[in-house]
Image 1 (cartoon, rainbow, N blue to C red):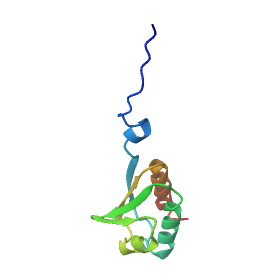
Image 2: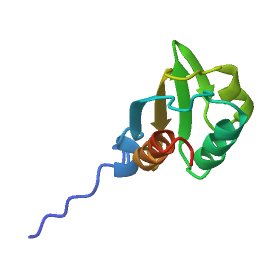
Image 3: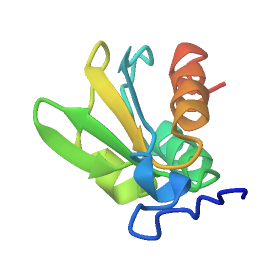
Image 4: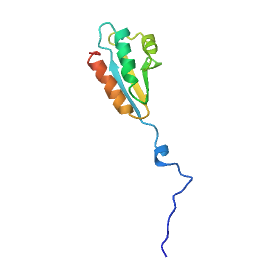
Length: 107
């Protein structure tokens, strides 16, 4: 007699058991004028391309990277260190892409 094992229905599906993807990296503002309106607009637009939540953290202030106004409230000047933090699907891609923007001075 062959024995069949049924899946345990109380166990969460594999996708639900996995914690959401989280990625973060610290960048420095290399623009001499700091993170002003033009780079903030580029940053917000590019962050919106990703389905994950993307935040920017500076000295404990945490803002939505998909919002130009939120980014501008940081008043991040030249040389400021910012943490880019992403949670959710494609978080690693989002952080890598946004870090490249900072490295290329938003050009």
